[in-house]
Structures are given as structure tokens and as C-alpha cells.
Length: 488
Image (cartoon, rainbow, N blue to C red):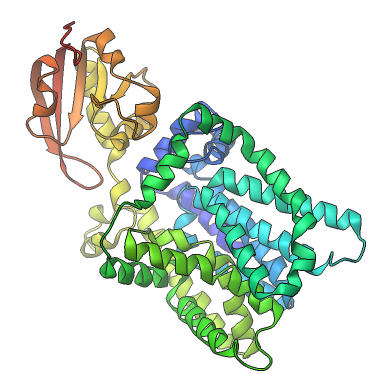
């Protein structure tokens, strides 16, 4: 696919550093396990596989992302062709692969890429089960499709727990299409569910052994404790979907959804294929809109809706014979892709011609970390290679990656001992007790938050940092004293 080849070339020429999450996933990949603090393990396994092939460079760490999105487009194409025809299938795959959210996601390594791949695969196998193995005694075919669905569900859950929304969509479909219960309910779904649970079992065991850290983080990330309503956040989330799915496709999807709502009362109503697609598109989108109102929801949290959303848009426009609008969708998405490519392969801060639009740079927070790590490295060497201490996880993971050739001892400042991230879970302040000294990198200008724990706090350096361009400070800390007061 030309788009995927373009994206691979963009990765090879990329001029932005790893994001905090990407650096964290790379760090996890150095010690493959069945679970990690904030995410299931498959993202780390993918990075371990790609870096084993081509090294630890940024482009290799991100290599799986464009390939997974290309694979998702293939499953969408084949599912749409099964439901309708080859023309709808081709346009559905092209729409998905070109949407702005996928273009951006293809330049990063995140849990969204494997989630969308396995979601698309699961939907394809579900369509095959619902259409091809409908009680016709083709046991071998049904067994293979059920296995495929179970594998897709299980691996999707190992990518991101949001894969569980697939079962939500299935439940809605069985509710609004009772005839589907003959092919997709009861014993027919037992096999796929067993396969999915067997794949997820090691991660469940890891969570059990670690106080259900990943599940707890997932709940905290949603922040159900929030009490006030946030109408502005709702509008922001809704508006962001025009950027994620594309302005024209999202407008068309809203139109299709409104028409479907009206047609539900017609004599002919909605056909089974339409109900299937709507069941896997609207419930998650509506749920995320609700979350954005009562707590918070990131723009990408509704991304799974656009797997089937792409098919709905393609079906509606092909049915109307509106190929000019389909071509306009691809053309507009191509313009966005070219803009992303320009930002990805060049730093707008270094180009006076486009510096005025640097604030639009989607990679702004990912620039300058390599250089910043170099400054920290020089301080670290000059002061005898002490423990590197930081207040935030994001700083430590960037140092871990960009100073990976050094033997670093990295510790997150956490005197309360509460677990908020990977470092809190795996490293404690006993490392400071062993060393007694540290190099603190912080955004606190006075370092008062650590003064009671060290005999000496010596300012070393202060300057504007990378990413958010906030001011950062470095201090040499000597004579660590534990909270109990024992000096070193």
C-alpha cells in the first residue's frame, strides 16, 4: 500500500524524539513480562520484536504501528466486502487507512495500533461467523473462525483493555438484531471466549500478584470520582472527533446515524448489516461522549468506533453514487498527511518560514529530549555518576532511553511509597540509601521538597527544558537520610 510505504519512509526520516509513553514502552520491552503498571504487555512484546530485528532506534521502535494499521485496513476491506461488495470494501479500507487519527498514530508506537488491528480482525471473524457459518453444518469453518475470533479478542485485550468494548458492541447487536442470536450467542461463542480468557490468563495472574496494578490504573485514568459536569469538555471531545476521523467522514457518520435513528420506526426499518455496523460504532462513541461530560475522555478513546464507522461511511456514499465526495475525503486526508509528514521530518522551530505555525506541531512535546538527556549525562559524569533522581516518570523514561548506553541508577522521588507508575512499582528509595548521593532533575526552583532528606542540596544548573519548554533545575544531593532519620 502506497500510504503504508509513505509512512515507513516518514519514520525513517523522522526528526522528533520518543514521547514519554513510547520511552516507557521501550523500557518495558527490555524485560518482557506478562504485565506492567499502566498497560497490558503486548505493546512491550511488539517493541521487543521490532528492536530485535533492526535495533533500538526511534524508527524501529515505532515500526509496528504503520504495519498494524495497514493490517487493520485489510480486515476492514474484507469485512465490508463480505457485508456488501468489493467496491464498498475497497473504499472502507481506504477511508480507515487515510483518516488523520491513523496517520498520526502511524508515526508513534502506542497501544492504539494493536488494539485497532485486533478489533478489526475480531470484527472480520464475527462477520464471517454471522454470515458464512450460519447453521450450515460447516463445523471446520465455524471452528476456524471461532478460533480466529478468540485469538483476536484475547490479543486485543493484551493490547488494551478497551478491547472489552467489543463485547459491549456484540451485546447491543444481539439486542437490536434478535435473529443474530442463532449464530452469535450461546455455545457458538463459548469457544472464542475460552480462547480469549486463556490468552488473558497470564496477565490476570500478573495483576493478582501485583495488587491489580493495571486494572487500578485503568480505573484511576477514567477518574470516576469526579463529581461536576463538564459541558466544555464534552464539546471539546466531540469537536476533536472531526480531527480524529476526519471532518467529512465524521460529518457523514453523524448524518448516517441520524437517518438510522429516524428509519428505526419505518416499516422496513434497518437491515441486519446496518444494525451490525451501528452496534459496533455508536455505543462506544456515545459512552465516550458521556465520560467526557462527567469526568474526562481523551480524543482517541473512541477510535474503535471508526473501524465500523469507515464501513458505514463508505456504504452510504457508494450507495448514493457519491464518488466525488469519496475522492474529496481521500484528497483532504492526503493534505493532512502531507502536513504531518512536514512536521515529522523537520523541526518547525528551526525553519523561519514555518515557525509561525510551530504551535500546531503535533510533535512539539517530543522535541529536545535527546539534547536534554545529553546535558544530564554531562552533569552525571562530572559529579561522579550518582543516582539520577527525578520527580516525574516521564523524565526518567526519557533518560533511560537516551542514555541507554550508560549504566544508570534511576529513581523516582516518592517518599510516601505510593504506587503511581512503573518506577514506583519496581524501584524504591532504598537505592538512595545504598548510594547516599544523587543528581536531582526537577522543575522545582528551590528543591525544598527534598531538603529534609539530604544533608546537602547544592544547585548546579537551571535552564529551559524540552517538550513543554518549562524551566528545569539540577541539584547535587549528598548524605541521604531516610524518612526515619538514619543518615548515610
